[in-house]
Image (cartoon, rainbow, N blue to C red):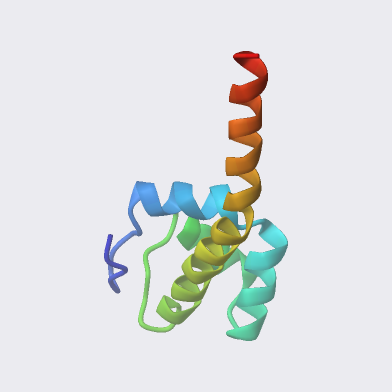
Length: 89
């Protein structure tokens, strides 16, 4: 799932971003890169292609998705096992 200039991000990466990054985070990251929120959203949703100018923004959005997932995963895993325990009790 390489992020390459001149290409769209993969469907899987787009899905991952939308699973783990909210729109306010995309806006904040876009602002940090002096790129419009609309561009960040459009690339994340595969409407526009990655360019040399916006590639760093998309990389940071992916990093944020990974961070958010890693922070939330222990809670989700705990809830998962609790549900399984409750079902089999």
